[in-house]
Image 1 (spheres, rainbow over the protein chains, first blue to last red):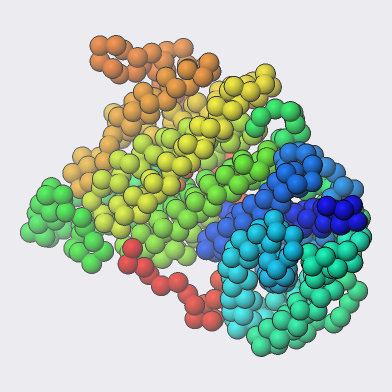
Image 2: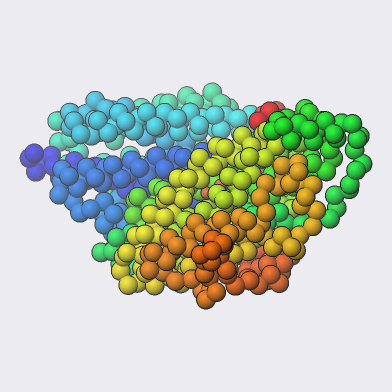
Length: 253
Length: 327
Ligand SMILES: [Fe+2]
Ligand SMILES: [Fe+2]
Ligand SMILES: [Fe+2]
């Protein structure tokens, strides 16, 4: 593989994996603390899919791009070397925030995997097909709850609308192109963040309106995560995630 | 996971206020190995004791998710992280199954959870102890779940249909928890000096709570005959404790670990194990709410309930309240 493709491709995969790992980590924080037991279970299951997908992608980076062992890559880097978006590193917050984030993020993932399942880079297309099957259920879950809380009472309506407004600028920030993306587009590896974002905006807009939400103001997307610039929330999350592993990274855990 | 010990309440059982003919039929069915179903006639004490027991079990799953749950975000490496997420998720699934089983006896999930957070109903004492290090998670996964399985396998032979069916599924899942806990312990036991020390210290901390797990000696508890005849209580506390010790102590020693009890010894003639009597005053203090973490565990649970109330209220409004299951 030529360098002008290899570089952006590995960065693209790393960014995807980092987003999934941090998102899964955040979603797992609901385990045992959800508003009803069924939601504990749902968030725990989504979190497992996301962490599992991240693991698969780090494995791909190890086998095809010469990266270190997935545990080393995931559990020992600091924030400057992490490329997750601001959306996923935001604290779990209340259930309304978590649900709005879950909906906006997983819908983007669903479309991303649809695109990637047609990728000319076979190993990624294969994984994307598998992940797509998992994310379908995440989106279905998110949609069910987004809709039923908008159909609930005045409090739940107000809370959900304001959560969507709060999350939206962060959600628009997950579409952050890697340097050299043009080469990926030219090679048919990925259709590009901008095409993905357009498709996402269309679906989100139609669905929110259908359920009775007002569309949030178009604000500036919160970008920078993909370049290693993060909010104050990421480093503490990484410290926590690596706390045990870093006691002795050469030990077998 | 499950709390052992049938905590409290037996003294309030009223004897013989049921219709003697119905009672005789009921007891004959149980003696014949029939399962009792929600719509069947049952003595008031049977219903009361089962609700208490299943509810305590469900609460133990919910509270039991807390000590391990806080380690999900810190689990070292993908394999452990995913396994722990799945395990704690299972425990919440057990709570769901058990609340449904208890609801068939006429008490709503909401009422049970209210009684948990206002301190009226109990949960297993073992969850009032802290998980200080990653090794505590390993010990919990292997030995607390191991103890729970002894208890749950016994109860799965009981007489109340919905509880028995829930337990069969729970026991199946628990066998994976046990494997995974054991694997975690083995890695630490055969790992670096630091890992071994961490494990030994955790084991020292958990031994007494594990000895307390099955509840006080049978010589100290009352009214168990009727509950055993009705197949509500299926094994004596002392028998379960013996079973646990004989299953796990040899395995612990094989790993080169020690236990903080010099009296632990198997009598080769009887096969029975001798062990130091754990501090029962401490056990009763923890039940009363004076354990190291009772207040914190309930506070966490109460906060979770309060933060989630708006969601449950919105569901009620949307007429999507969960219905009483047939389990
Ligand atoms: Fe358990
Ligand atoms: Fe359990
Ligand atoms: Fe378990």
